[in-house]
Structures are given as structure tokens and as C-alpha cells.
Length: 442
Image 1 (cartoon, one colour):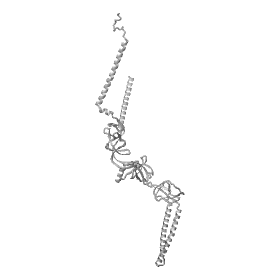
Image 2 (cartoon, rainbow, N blue to C red):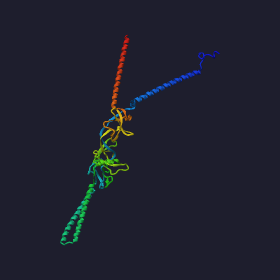
Image 3 (cartoon, one colour):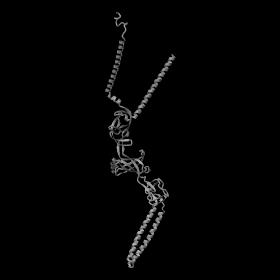
Image 4 (tube, rainbow, N blue to C red):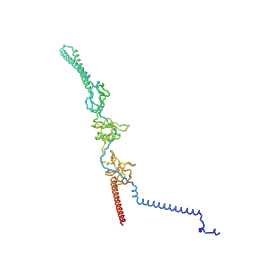
């Protein structure tokens, strides 16, 4: 009985294992809750201070969010911008002649070589002239015979007229003789024409150049028989100086071109090669065609060039620049400074505090790598040409010269810091040597 009523505080009494595990679980739960509460408190404090700083310093946060980039820039200046029309053209000779013989015969002489430059009247080839010389001689002889007959008929007519006045001959005989004289006059005139034809044929046996220009490849050789009006002819001559270029312009530009021509303006034209890098010649605008091609919406035009060195070659494809007018004192910037956005064209203008701001602009005529600005920009302002993809309105920019200065300053500071470190190291080594000497002496 005494064992049953022992106190619970008695160490001799054993505890229940279930109660021990429950107590341990409650203590661990309490510790976990305490850790979670501390973490929540720390997160709330961080959120509070962060939002308080953002509320108190909105300008500083905004500046920290703005990107900073190194950019290249150019200064907007004033210059004259030519207004040009670009087109594709074909070099066309002013005149091309296929020299065909006027008489038939065997070629006995070729007096030119391929590619030669000739002038009008210069001999090119010769056809055997002997048949034509014989025909001329025959025509001259026939003319002499008929002229003698005419002279005799006139003498007889004069004698018959004298006899008729003496009433010694019939009037019918006089009239017959007068008709004979007229007939012989016609015969003599025909003979003279035959002589002229024979002389002309003899001259045609010598083939000459009708125009000046460059000869092509030779189509015939000595000994070939050639007929009058032969298709290939004796030679082909192409005039190279001056020379024309035929090109096409948009139909919308017809009015502008006509207005300039009507005002008496001489429109300069420039020809460039296919790569648009080399200038082949400069000339002047000649005329427009008389109608617009409805299928392409273009009109053909022609310009003439002196071509003294023969750089322009017939049927050559070229690029043509026709200058309509010149825009005087326009604000000009590099074409790389013009950017395109949803609201139109714009540029980044660098202010005095090295911040970039967006300016909406209206772009005018362009030439090569320069663009004129009709509105939205003033002369002398700095515009960003490279690095603008990393900018927003109000971004702080670094200019190339400033970066070099900063690098130089950074290098100087680094060298000063290195020198100071070296001096401190030397002092420390010196002090250690002194301490070491003192210890050994003592």
C-alpha cells in the first residue's frame, strides 16, 4: 500500500515515455514559430525602408534607372544640298552607220583596221574601179558623137532657113530639120547624164566614212565580191564623241523637270558605274520623251556627254544622277543620326549636361551619307550618330573624349595607389630589418 501512494516527485518513480515526446515536440514547434516571426519582421522592415527611400528620393532612383552609354556624336551644320533624281540608263551613240557600197564589185583594198577612229570622207575600202572607168569612157565617147551630130544638124538648119527666105526650099524640110536639132539636143543631154552617172559610179568604187566615230570589227576581206546595198556592208561606224545616255524617270518627276527646263535652267547630269563609286562623265540634260509608259509609270529621258576619252561605251549600263535644284543653307546631319519610331523620324540631341533628349524632325532631301533636316533641329546642336540603341529620353551619355580623360585619370590614380603600396611595403621591410638587427644585438 505504501508503494501505491508514493509521491510523483519521488525520483524513484519512473516517468511515462509518451509524455516526454509530447514535451519535446512542443518545444521544437515554439522555436520554429519564433524563427518564422523573426524572418517576417526582417522582411517587413526591409520593405518599409526600401519604399521609404523610393518615396523620399524619386529623382535619384530615376537617375539610377536611366542607362548610361558611350556614344559618338556630330554637330548639325548648314550646307548646300543638291536635289537629285537617280535612275538607271543605257549609253546610246548619237549616230551609228553601217557603210554599204553603192556599186557592186570585187574589193581590191581595205584601208582601215578594226577599232580605228575615223573622220568623215576618210577612205575605208576600194572596189575594182576598172569596169566603172570603162563605162565612163564609153559615156564620154557617146556624148562626143551626139554633140557632133547636133552641131551638124544646126548647120543644116541655118542653111535651110536661108534657102527658105529665098523661097528655094519647102518649109516642111525646114521644120523637119528643126525637129532633128531638138532631138539631138535631148540626146546630148542624156549623154551628159550618162557621163555623170559613170563618174559617180567610179567615185563609189572608193568607199569613204560618212560620219566620224569608231570602227567595229571588219565584216569583209580583200578579194570578196560585194553587192550594192549588202546587209553587212564594208564597216560599221559608231559615234562616241559626243554620246548620249537614255534613262527612265518616275512619272511624278515630269512636272518638276519641265518647270526647270521652261525656266531656262541647264540641268547637270552625272554618270556613275554600276557600283556607284566611279564617275564616268558629266553632261547636261537634253529632253524627255513625248509620252509616259503606262505599264511601268516612267518616262524616257536623254542626256548628252562630251566623252573625250571614250569612257562611255555604247550599250553600257550606267547609273545616272540628274540634279534638279540645290537646297541652299540647309541643316545637315549624318544619315546615321536619323532614327525611325512609331511617331516618325527623330534624333537624339545631346544637351550641355550630357543628357540625350529626343527631338522629332522632318527629313528633307538626302545625298550620299548626309541628310537635310527641314524642321526640329537647330544648327550647332550635337546629335548622336552611334550608340543610340541603348538610349532613352533623358539618358546620361559619355562622349569619346570624356572616356579617354576618365581612363587617363583612372590610370593615374591606379599608378599612385600602386606607388603608395610599394612605399608602404618598403617601410615595413625596413622596420623588420631594424627589429631583426636589434634582437640579434641584444
